Image (cartoon, rainbow, N blue to C red; front, side, top):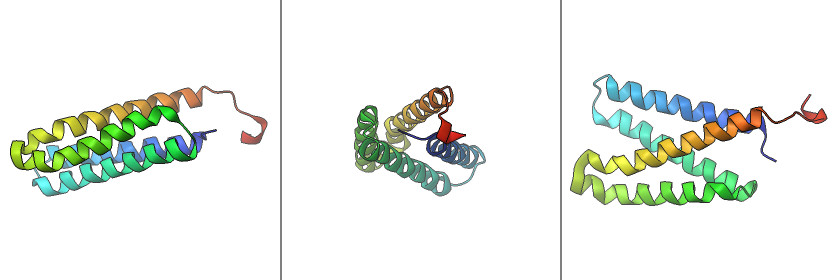
Length: 118
């Protein structure tokens, strides 16, 4: 069973990285810092999806895992061919995974607590 603490940590980590990407992108910094934060967010989400899928046997994370990996691999030549527009599918996959993590965390918070959680 997935613990509330694990999902809260995952959600907070993703939210901090998303805030960092938005702050770096909107502050007028060069592309390097916010692209590095975006790559770190993608890596965080890939590891999180892999952890949930393999260790907790959470089958609903496999589509996100494949979408994140395939969009990250397609982004490499896409940046050369299309420029920053190649980030759109990757960012869409990142946003979808963040939404799923938020939904799952909120559903876990509504779950009745067991005696061992007290």
